[in-house]
Image 1 (tube, rainbow, N blue to C red):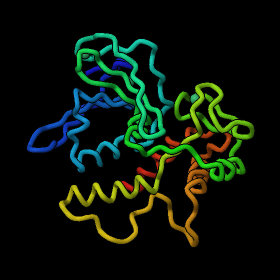
Image 2: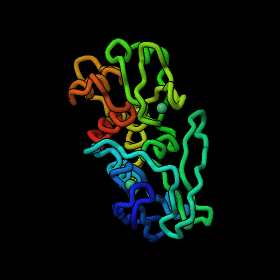
Image 3: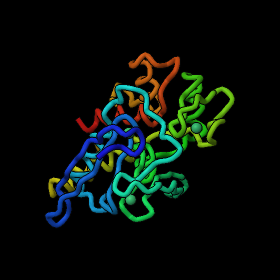
Length: 234
Ligand SMILES: [Zn+2]
Ligand SMILES: [Zn+2]
Ligand SMILES: [Zn+2]
């Protein structure tokens, strides 16, 4: 199946679903987006959800391509409708086929929908500002000048990051569920590398920028957080 965004062949993944069914989804690593047929996402088992996390946390080898203004359903070629939704206080969006064939959602919006994305607290923003002056908006890709702005001047979305602790807890629960165990007591696995004193999530992100040599034009915070999540999953 070809990607509605960039027309290249999507990566087809098949997972074991609930009650012996098979769930198939398609991913585009150029647009960093997922196509779900119908309600397939709702039927993902814990093991399948972990696999999706694994795929979307793989580092991008090129900048993400932005979608064209008109997207068409890969099943019926009808125009996909941009749909806005909310997960608690986090807005997210996707494109759906009006005939119910499915929907296209970016990796970042998939994580927003799963409630893994949080705006930075004022303290976290201050901590980030002391290390980094400019960051790319995870929503639209525009540069955000952290010295004067805490929301993207282009699209208005707040500077946000992946909630790494929440993701680590979820990964622990999904792993336990996938192997049929109860979630173990004790501290969850950590996406943040442990040192002598535990670094804050912001410190871990800044460290990831430095390691990648990207402090001058860092990628989005969410994308960088995904790299840390990838470490946790491997
Ligand atoms: Zn694409
Ligand atoms: Zn359709
Ligand atoms: Zn923006």
